[in-house]
Image 1: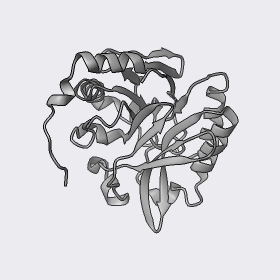
Image 2: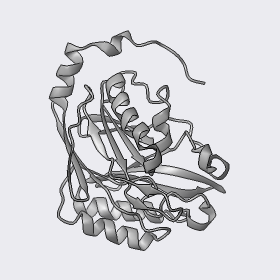
Image 3: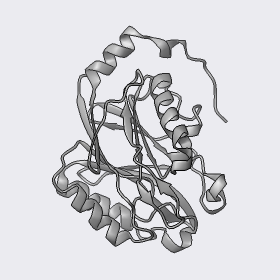
Length: 253
């Protein structure tokens, strides 16, 4: 794997329950940026809101916007949204390709502290996207606290975590992102929102991309966090330090 992959994440203060405004903000922030993947926060079109009946997409509004954005920019775009499907609500992570095809992952670990588990249905399957020579695992916020689900079985090279992770617990966010990169010998990009939401929770700047050795490889310029992932560097690091070969085998039920 010699490919380089540029990821640009958008730090922005999500407008509370206002999809049109958020779509416009994102387009404006990213108008001059270029990337292989544009990454957006968890529930980027509404904010992390626990009354999905009020905000959930019923006609794939967010997905349609993402498809249009990806086609216009000829690049991939990824982020999560509140979605209603067959009478159930999901916190759904979309990874949309320029040609309109997409992958999706429904958040498995629902944040019971806020009541997410009583309003949303949990996903069951991991989603790994193959894109430009990279195998990319999709994860959402609270998933970060559960290392078994994200264990690298030598089936992925990078992980994308999108989140609404407040400042009161930000040390855990920073620590666990670094840990997931080291233990899985993968590049880990964690994108958090910033600002203050409708629940008066504050979100400090905390987005970063970690290399497999735990070092930060991203740079922040205004609202944009960018990282260029090197497949050649990752392959050489894994070849030199064959830690994944010594991992424990287990099955998750």
